[in-house]
Amino acid sequence: MSTPIIQLQNVSKSFGKKEVLHNINFAVEKGEIFGLLGPSGSGKTTLVKCMIGMEQTTKGKIELLNTVIPNLNITLKIGFMAQSDALYQDLTAYENVDFFATLYGLKGKHKKERIKYVLSLVNLLEDQRKRVSDYSGGMKRRLSLAISLLHEPEVLILDEPTVGIDPILRQSIWNELGILRKNGTTIVVTTHVMDEAEKCNRLGMIREGQMIAIGTPSELKERIQVNTIEEAFLTYGGAK
Ligand code: ADP
Ligand code: MG
Image 1 (cartoon, helix red, strand yellow):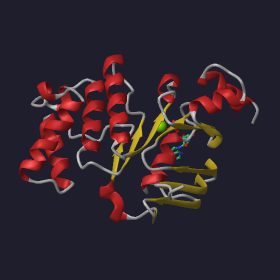
Image 2 (cartoon, rainbow, N blue to C red):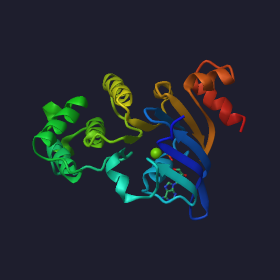
Image 3 (cartoon, helix red, strand yellow):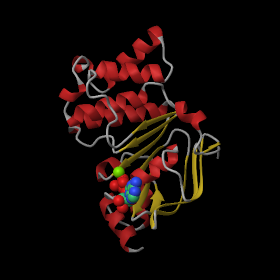
Image 4 (cartoon, helix red, strand yellow):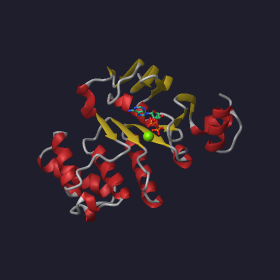
């Protein structure tokens, strides 16, 4: 097997005395969509923040693209969509995307084309001249997703990307993730939605900061002979 794109070894994270991640181990291969499934408060956001170097781990080691994290040099190779949108409310959607495109070093015709492409992907071309303060929650999510895709990152890390997005657009976003994956992008996506978990190539189930099971959705179900990811989650969690 090739070297994994992302590798976590014995990762723990505490805030003060409280340990919120306990000895997490997993690897993500090139071109995988790896889902982190867990309820609110289970540690998903903390884990992805550690993976991109926004939070420092207390113990263990994280490598991304053969680089030990944190490391500023690989920031441009990662696309990150945070759980809460980091957008400039007073600017229009277009101005927001343009700002980040410039930050990512895109220029001229290529920049214009990328902006148009990512905005069309999330179906925001018609609303691109509106101010973000006039956007709905779902539109802000879509705009954040567009921004994370601007610089064609090798690794895409999405923290609950489809919260507040209607089912039709949610479907089209998952289709797009599938296309990105086929083109070689490695994707980590957190979710607490069971049907989204089914769309991942592999899943890591997280409960109370512990990885309770890892595998493909069908492996996870077959191993314990249940029919749904939800049942699987409850069984692995209960057998802890
Ligand atoms: P999730 O994204 O799965 O909802 P989080 O990673 O946000 O979970 O949170 C996991 C746990 O860590 C929660 O108990 C949360 O209160 C705690 N936590 C997260 N960030 C901080 C912080 N900056 N300081 C203290 N505790 C935190
Ligand atoms: Mg979270």
